[in-house]
Each structure stands twice: as structure tokens, then as C-alpha cells.
Length: 224
Length: 243
Ligand SMILES: Nc1ncnc2c1ncn2[C@@H]1O[C@H](COP(=O)(O)OP(=O)(O)O)[C@@H](O)[C@H]1O
Ligand SMILES: [Mg+2]
Image (tube, rainbow over all chains, first blue to last red; front, side, top):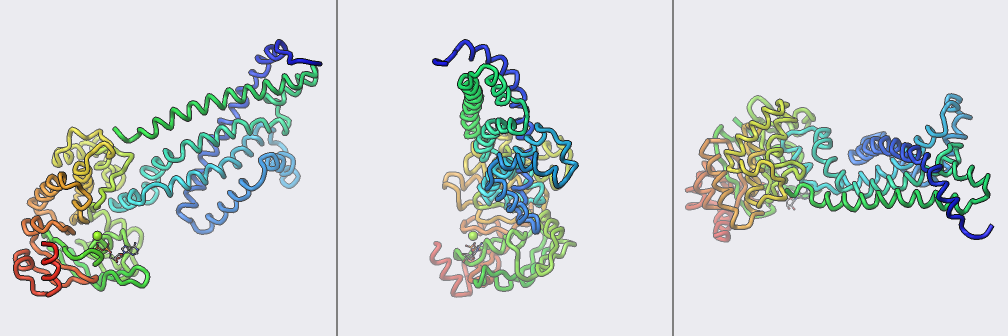
């Protein structure tokens, strides 16, 4: 076959870009859900809520200790065997669920560290004016923790975007699946997968640039 | 009337408060002095349960709390009847000066936002910081931060204000403005319990001075007697050293 076929690659750009919204959509949906779940998990851990805390530790340990691909297979191919209702779940839904649980475990640990990183005097001041623990967390502690955790949460988002490529293994035609199909017809596997890599690279670099700007802004925050 | 009976606290095996009894009359301004590590901060922190006392009772008006069986609701109620000023200010880093003062009004008193902010503005005027309403703590001087800290403690109109060495963390240049503000609050006959090493200030504003050592109140009386004619040798020794 020989050298890189650039024309073929350029022609493939619009074909693959059509699937970019699906990739970003899956990542965005999973990010929102994972953030909500991670806040709940982190709060359970910080407050050491009885009964729940050991369950959360188990959850975090499992989802950080096993590969995302294995988790996705477990959900999509494994669970319907135990619970027939899960057979109705689509590949996209399973991918979002898997990404959510997997990254919520990582994000919960970042958030927990960030909450513990908020100065103890901030807690004491909320207590001194008679705020409840819930008010203190919602209004004072979590907003400050979010700033501490923001860079690491954005890292998780970048990992999540890359993780969406695994949806391909659940039969979802996203960028990776589309590239695979195109290449199967043309035998131009290198060009197709290189283009997928470049698209991911551009997207994650753009986010990394955003992250650097955000960090500068966060460092300036509350300093007016 | 405020009544403290048998207030006791240990940290591990270390007894820090050994059965403190203290009555505070409405409008009374009490200054607590004593060597460091004798439990002055712990006394203040136990009164609003920032440190949970092991035993004793605290009564503020019609609210009586027994440390041995204090419920979460009772502890909250007690904290809402006390204002606390921290040595290191402990302002909410994510709230402006106005937001720091309004926070308790919004969350604890549940005032409508406009009302809470108007009340905070009035307090900002009192503490001379109207022009800093929108400034975050990081942009304020130590003296300004502590004045906001005092403003935050004033917001709930608590019957008792607790001050734990409010000027000890300040650069000398800011001490005066904070003491001036406290003097004005004292002149308004706000009930205050103040831990401080500012002896001249104590002499000026205190109705009563307590000398603490080893987790006990060793000696107490009007400032003229404690400073000019201390009875206990430990008080005399302490005053000799700080002068
Ligand atoms: N959280 C704590 N844990 C253990 N020991 C403490 C704690 N807080 C205070 N102490 C000890 O209790 C004693 C009294 O402390 P404190 O009330 O801060 O004294 P003061 O304010 O008079 O200097 C000291 O020996 C101090 O080391
Ligand atoms: Mg102290």
C-alpha cells in the first residue's frame, strides 16, 4: 500500500467529525452525572456517615481497581444475564453509566482530598454562627473545595473523553467505530485510526489550554 | 443572665478545664487573663461547643444545655446565642465582607436576601468598612479582616459575645482600630467575655477580670483590684511577668 494517503485522510475528516458530537455528548452527560455522584460520595466519606462510608469505600476501591473496559463489559454484556431488565439498555446508555461510575470514583477521591484541604477554621466559623453541617458544606466548604479540585476534575473530564472510545466495544458507532468501518472498506487502517487520534488530541489539547486559563483564574479568585 | 456550672474538659488524659463556675450579668464585660496553655481558649470554645465539654451546664436566658446530654438542636441553639471572634479571624474565604456578615442572617435567621444585605450594610457602616463591602478577605488588611470578624459575630444580636485573643494575630499597626471597635461595643453594654493580653484595654473596659491558671479561675474581681492589689501569688507572678 505504501505511503500515507493524505487525500484519503482529509476526505475522512468530515465523515468522522459527524460522530464527534456523540463522543462529546457521552462525555458531557457522564461528567455531569459523575460530578453529582462524586459530591455525594465525597461528602459521605468526609462526614464518615455510618453504614454508608464502608460501602462508598468499597465502591471507590472497585471502580478504581478494575479496568474501565472490564466494567463496561460487565454492565453491557454481563448484567442482563442476572437482571433481564438490563437487556433493554443501549450501548450508549451503558457507556455513559460505566463512565459515570468509573470516573465518579476518581473524582470523589479528588473532592474528598479537596474538602479536607479546606482550612479547619472555615468549618469552625460556620459552627460558631450556628450553621448546620449541610449549610456549611453547601455554602462554604464545597465551593472552596471545588476550586481546589477543579484542575483534577478537568483531568478526569479529559480522561473521560478519551474513555468514550471504548463505547465502540459495546457496539456503538462513535468515531472509533466509524473509523473501523471506513477502514474495513478501504484497508487504510493507519490513516483512519491516525485521524481518530488527531481528533482526540486536538479536543484534549483545547481542554488542557482551557484548564491552564482556569487555573490562573482560580488562583486569582477571592482576591479582589 | 448567663450561668456556667462545673464546666469540665479534658484532651485525652490532660485536664484543661477543671469545673469552671461563672455567672455573667446582662451587659457585663469580663476579661480573662492568664498564662498561655491554661485553658482560656478552651473555656470560650466550650461555651459554644466548638470544643464539646465533658461535663457541666451552660444557661443563656431560657436555654439550658447539659454537656452530658446535649442534643444537636440544643448545640445549634446555644451557638445562635453566642457570637465568636477568632484570633485568626476565620472569615469565609469565598464570601465578601458583606457576605461574611450576611451569612448567618441568610442561613440561620433565614432573612430574605435584601433584608440580610441591608442589615449587613448597616453593620459595615458601624465597623467603618462600607467601602470594603465587596472585598474578599484576601484583599483586606489584618485589622479590616478582624473588624469584619467582629461584624459577623454581631450579626445575630447574640446575648453573649466571645472574643479569643482578637488582636494577638495582628500586626501592631492594626491593633488600635480593633480595640477601638471593641471599646465602642463595650460602651453599648453588650455582654462580652474577652480573652486578651491587652492589659490597659482590660483595665479600661472590664467590669470584672478573671485570672485563670491550670484550668481554674484563680482570682477574680474589678480591674482595679486584680491589677493593683492582686491577692493570689500566681496572679502577682503573672502580672509581674507581663508588665
Ligand atoms: N484540640 C486539642 N487537642 C489536644 N490538646 C489541646 C487542644 N486544644 C488545646 N489543647 C491543650 O489544652 C491546653 C489549654 O489550651 P488553651 O485553652 O488553648 O489555652 P490558652 O488559650 O489559655 O492558651 C493546652 O495545654 C493545649 O495544648
Ligand atoms: Mg488561647
